[in-house]
Image 1: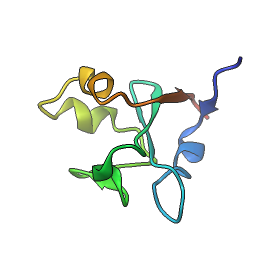
Image 2 (image 1 turned 90 degrees about the horizontal axis):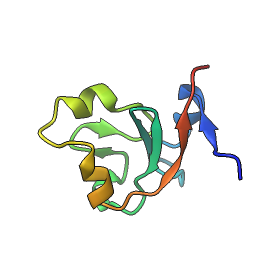
Image 3 (image 1 turned 180 degrees about the horizontal axis):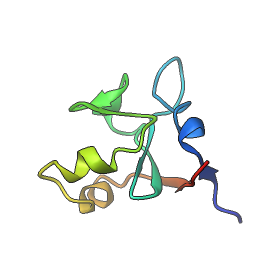
Length: 81
């Protein structure tokens, strides 16, 4: 099975608005945050769905292990346009 890829423009469609799933990218991996109530309607502590949150998240007190603890599904990889 081929892994799904997303450009930033494609990822932007998954913003958690108007019935779209809330996806975000972190260090090249795209996660589905739909199971986390804080990500609805579109943000979690200022982090927006439909974006690459790597820079913002790296400034937070949390590490990437947080995504594993939350059991966020990986839906693909972020690629350059």
